[in-house]
Length: 385
Image (cartoon, rainbow, N blue to C red; front, side, top):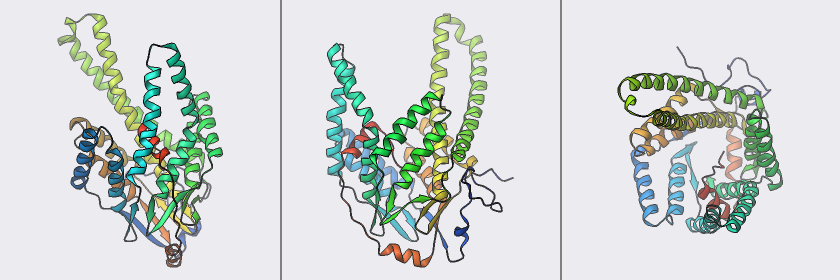
């Protein structure tokens, strides 16, 4: 019995862009187009060495080495991701990232001290700085995307990001407000707008990415629906497990405690149980958005296809959470390799031989500052597609 997949049946192609993963446009069936699968050759044992050294040196150097750790980590994943026999590369300068992080730390650390102090004037100043930084989030996202993509290359051709800062405010500020006011009913629309902004603003060489067919909001609602169903199943299993635990505990361990203590125990267990639920659901949603974007991405005659199995990716994410939990994080490198390998290798690129030769001659070299990249890493804000 086959598992459900996040894609439409092959015999019913559509151009409306409103299914969870619509079929490619009819141009993608051109016999001149050749399919090139993305392959990932990273290994958990190899990445563990990088991961362990990165953490050790970052702790010993009080965070200074984190810039070099980021470059080593990204370079490992880029170099082990191959398309048509050629790997990607990450060319960022760690010193530039470090400078950006130091500037970010010089702003964020005093702000945190001020907002947590008991002096009214400091609290007011800290909140003003916090509000100002909040308004700068769209700018930070755009600058970070520019830095990240300009330091990413394939066959010597650099990527780039040309999204407008003015439009980023509408996408990240106005749509966030609209989603909040609608009690998250507009959350899928907000995510669609944000992912579309990132995709359409990305370039490879002289060519812009676009979506064919255009991204539809229904696909993101379907992705949220799948995530919600999985979350509901998790809650149901959790409820049954906690109920059984309480029934057993009430007869053995808990009677010796007062009712107030027992209620606190119940509350702590319930709260802690929600943490993996939130992480699990968020990663399911992220995997679904990855598939939606790369199933409709288009680059000047080059088509992308992505097909993931919702049951399999859910199992990978769930088992990764359990592996991290029971290994106290020591199995994190293997978990990271598992999910990246599955997602990366779910993508294939369809292009003609002539189109491939066209891109080999299309070079672009750009420079960009790393202030936003440093701020992005400091606050843990992920702006990648």
